[in-house]
Amino acid sequence: MGACDHFRLMDEATLTRYLKEIGRGKNAAGDLPREDAQALFSAMLAGRVPDLQLGGVLIALRVKGESLDELAGFAAACEASYLHLQPPGDGAIPIVIPSYNGARQLPNLVPLLALLLAKAGTPALVHGVVNDPGRVTTREVLGELGIEPATSLCEAREQLGARRVSFLPIDVLAPQVAATLALRRRLGVRNSAHTLVKMLQPVAGAAVRIVSVTHPEYLVRMREYFTQHDSAALLLRGAEGEAVAHPRREPVMEWAYGGEVVAWKVEAGAPPQLPDRNAKATARWIESVLAGDTPVPAAIQHQVDCCRRAIAALSLRGTPVAAPDQQSAVRGTKQSPESPR
Image (cartoon, rainbow, N blue to C red):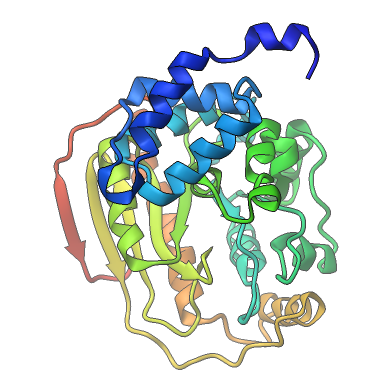
């Protein structure tokens, strides 16, 4: 850090006040107001928080958990930190698929979801990490399928227009967010950025995000968040945390839009025969599915149908999608067992 950079550091007294509020342990810690949360995370993303306090903030948040107002402030800071992708020139509404967990036991079927959407004419923008030691990433499987990452926002937009699918590395999409994400290697544990990257809205226009969680209790928090602070998200408990339906579970997708949540379900089909989890075997199996030689797993077909149904709902209502720094009133939660058409 250069000498001039010290003058841009966040005020130490302010940082101390924040840490005193959030750093008192799981049961005694308080929550930051939304405006303070946004100011703090903006400073963290911009490198204006010294390493000592930065580590303290991230660990304190991991211990106590983020409140909904804190998540809203953090999300607003993230969205303000990077340039957004212009939507495809033909006006098609894209599906945004975050991919940050990778596969440890199951094959990574995020590429299958994206390519099925693309095959149906729906643009699928996947953003995520390029590699993750010990896990099979979406980027690796796509590489085996001959699909290379976009190197710029313009290239990603061109790919969405030409082939309806693009993989945009988080380092290209949002470098400051990527740097915070990478602190896991230094701290040894995940931090708030791992939640926030799955909530990003990288398109400068209407888009449907798929937001996946690993643990059922966190699905409740995302449901609350996307009815109070944001909108236009398909929520699910994904496969190993990835934003793709678990191929061996009853498929349930929750559409959060306009302050309401509707659950779309179908009956679980027969458990599919899946490939080995390595990238090459997964890619060959995906090619077989796309060619019609292997059936599409019922859970993933349901997810494709839900994505297209969400886009239709967004198009039909024609209202602006709330930005992360805008609040909307909660109007309730609905449950609907029917399959999307």
